Every structure is written in structure tokens, then in C-alpha cells.
Length: 181
Image 1 (spheres, rainbow, N blue to C red):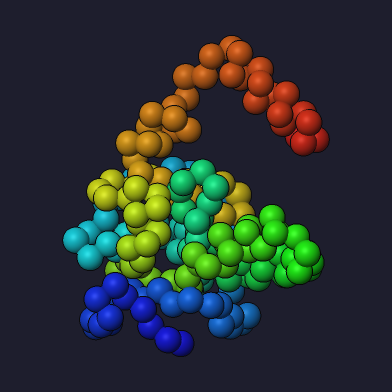
Image 2 (cartoon, one colour):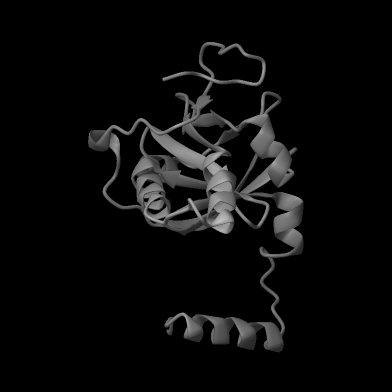
């Protein structure tokens, strides 16, 4: 695996992110269901501690990539492989919109590995994209994890004081997706 770090060096006991996804299927959990919200701070090197229960489900290596919401997504290598296969199945030779989405997704995706203390390096390019500078909110959302700047999370998606209109709109959105409780 080629190793990448902003400085070009890989210190011992540091977590490494590398492009691509050399998967070892024997080490990847069959399925993941991430739930809960955690808050951790980035250290001076741009590393973040992944909560232990999330690390157990992700396995020793996992994928980190940009989302359309200016947060970062983290997925197991098995989930990433599913996403990759889905995107690869969409012809892009004559569709500029598909090519653009593929560049956005694949061009900004890295395989990460947590060190013994559960820390992993978030590449500077991804930290900058998501505005991650200090406190990071880690949110389990089913098959993936989202990493948000805590200030952004607290002022928007993380709040739990939805108006009646917002709650009704979410219910309508869920119903349109075939989701009901």
C-alpha cells in the first residue's frame, strides 16, 4: 500500500491514509449499522479518534471520502466496494454529469487505518473541504459514518428542536422514500 501524508513522511505509530482500496475480505465485517453521535477533537497532526464501537464494525481499514453536504463520509471497505461497483456500472462516456460525480467521489477518497490508539489521519484536503479544525462530531447514520465540524453540526443538522413545519416536511420526505414508523 502506498502511504500518503501531507508532509510526505509517515511517522511511526501514525495512521496512514492511502488512495485506492486494496480490500482484505477476511478482515471486513459482513455488515455495519452505525448509530449514535460522538464528539472528539482533532490532534495537532490532523488525526481523529474513532469511537471504539465504530472501529470494531469498520475493521482495521476503512474508506473516507467527501459528501455533498460538506461533511466527510466514512464507510467500511465492504460498503465502499458496493458504492464503487454501483458507480462503475453507470456508463459515463457520454454523460458529463456522471463523470463529474465520479471525479468528486473517487478523486477525493482514501483508505485509512487506525493506529493502536484508534486515531486515523484525515488528509488535509478533506479536513479543509469539511472545515474540520478542532472539535469533530462523529455521527452514525446506518451504513456509514459522517464527520462534521461540531459548530456546523450544532447549528444545523445536529439540533433537535425542529419546528412543526420542518418535522412535517421530514415525515413527507420519508413517506416519499417509502419509510414509515
